[in-house]
Amino acid sequence: MSKKSLKRRTRKAGFGYFMREGLSSIFVHGFTSFAAVTVIGACLMITGIFSLLAYNIDLQIQQLSGESEIVVYIDDSVSREDAIAMGAKIRAMDNIKEAVFVSKEALFDAYLEKLGDEAYVMEDLREDNPLRDSYQINMKDVSRHRETVEALEKLQGIASSSSNQEVSERLIQLRRVTNMISYTLIALLGAVSVFIIANTVKLAMLARREEIAIMKMVGATNHFIRAPFVVEGITLGLCGALLAFFVQWGVYQYVTGQLVKGTAILTMVPFTQVWQPTLSVMLLAGLVLGVGGSVLTIRKFLRV
Image (cartoon, rainbow, N blue to C red; front, side, top):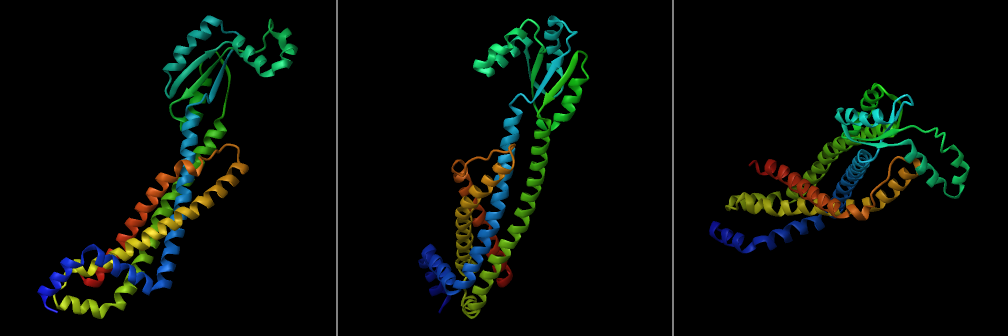
């Protein structure tokens, strides 16, 4: 075949030719391709599960940051006027987003409202209200919970405080661990997926090495030779991504259900709310892995 005829064939072939060649190679090496898709799917699925878990923990921490995590109680010796004036000092402190004054009368009424029909048993205590004036406080950064509580308790006139500090610290610690695992898995399993795709494409190239050699001898461009194998790598990556997505859907539902049963501090976003970005990320990851794995092998094989 002359160079001119090969160039004409290249121009006529176009995308359809590359797709046919790439897909036919997948079916020719059926078992190897199936194994590659399975491994890629497992890698992406495991990484996706931990990434979604980290996402849920971040949402939980953000929600916690918007709630009243700290309540400080004013000492009985402090007058109402001075108690209200303390609000300016509290709001001026570092990491304080909002501080709302709640009088002991308002707190008592709220308590009675919770009691409902049983509230009458507490009415006799209204005149000798045992509760204290307080401030409900929101923080800017929930990760600084402990130091914020300690700073508040040092203020003169503060008798005590209550907060969900333990919950905050547990969530933050869980986020750090989950993020570390997610990043490690992305790097490790990403490398495994690239290796699997690279080896699958390598097998296809070795099976066609004589054909490739002849094509190079008659003047075929590296692009013409490379394209079908890139298509094969992309197809393997995308198939693995789709497999990972659907398996992850079921695994996520089960795992998150068990987590919610085991701990009361974590609520999980339903998968139906995150399936679109999850699918998009999965497909993008499959595309990148497919291109990366195939190009890595092709460059070495063609010595480009």
